[in-house]
Length: 145
Image (spheres, rainbow, N blue to C red):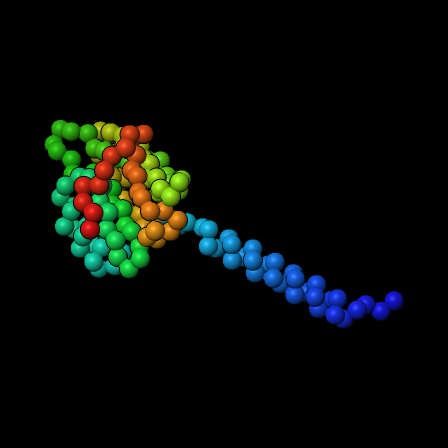
């Protein structure tokens, strides 16, 4: 029994359309919230971080369609314990980007501390508000630029 070439062509076109749809949906819905090194950021972002590195806090900088969040606890007074950031997570809920993290103290200053971190993510990618939760409690940005 001979197969119908039009039926085969239709089946192939349908399969290609389904694959394209699935690939397109997967890439557009993925929200990337990525930790980056200072050296991998644009010059203007590096300058913003340098200007604000003398004071601990949470900083937001926007450039070229991307946001950069700088969590800084690098400055430790003599005799104080250092602050480190742990469990940095994000989710988008009801058009709000929620960034949460745990802030802990450590007296072990001999190891590399996670006390100054930078995250990069696309501006307004599925959200119109940013909420920051430190140890489960809402907090605010020290500077938004």
